[in-house]
Image (tube, rainbow, N blue to C red; front, side):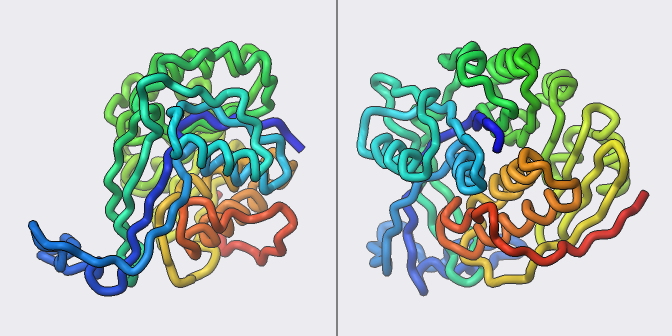
Length: 321
């Protein structure tokens, strides 16, 4: 098993669940929660208290896979922070890198979940997860991870570069799943890709980094910038490329989606969990897709994260070249 550090956000997720008032209404090509009227009082069916954030979600997948999972993140001294620590401890995740920030609340998301499609609208107060410049990259020298998995740092490219440089100094490999604020800085992001061994983006995100007429073309261009690249495309699957081959893959299974939250984290962390376990490129893609499928089948961004020894069938994929 490997030592894997997750660097990213830690949030308290509060789900509001309702069977009729949160059903989407379409206006043109846009879906809205049409029955919520300004000034009204809505009775919801249920509330689900969860924890999430890219750092937490990925660390849970690594831990359930049997790796020595560690989290570097910011939280507050409040019930939300306590809930996150409780979850991390229960999952066997090392919390040495979790910082309690004074005068900051733990980041909190209120998630309005559409009951038919599993789509959601998320209202987030990021609190302690808004900034990451307080984090000290030298903690990596103490934790000695073999892999660093990084999600969004809210566009803080300087902190990201500090951690990437430190990771390379200690010989750790890096997987990056950038967020919106990183993608809004394509030149800085391109500069950081020289450190990255595995890059995960979706189709829209890939188009913000490189040009291409197809996902395969963009994957080839991104592969030239760093090692392995995966471009997901929702229900259409995606493409992935490493030094040896380029493959197109479908979704693992067509299941009823209960909640889309955490799907990207589940795919990325699932891929790295399998790679760190010595699995092949194809096997890692299979576990990644199966992990994402399992996560969207449950309410919560990480409730469905798979265990290492789960039995899987083959992922439909085609080797392009």
